Image (tube, rainbow, N blue to C red; front, side, top):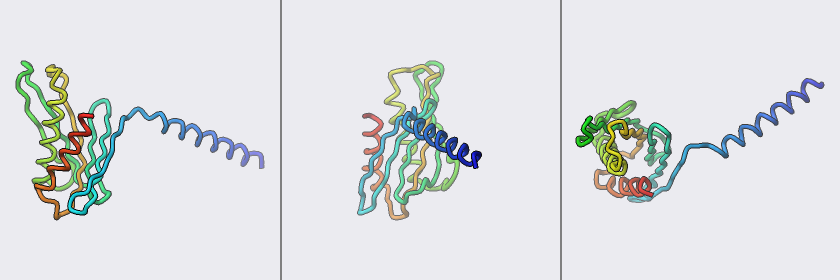
Length: 150
């Protein structure tokens, strides 16, 4: 019987520690949602030390995962963008367009430091409904850009 009480006490202590750690999580998060053509689009941005994770979802799923990076030449004057679909729909032009636009924006926001070592890395999870057009992406991308700037 005493063992059960000790286990219960240990479980309670562990739960208290877990809850304390959640409250002091070091990742900065911004989130919002917008409605485009009667469809809610959830947007979440998480800032990690080595990359920015952006989620754009119209169906409460992560969808296609894309990694996008800026790479600066040693001179610091030339910037190239590398976009790679990690999981999901490689042929969806909307995904590639969104990743390209966001990595360009991050590059501009990070442009005050022209060091080649200070490249920007983005992980994008994007789940769009089939009826979402390229035109529908404009307000979505604009909303993400506003969050990135704030």
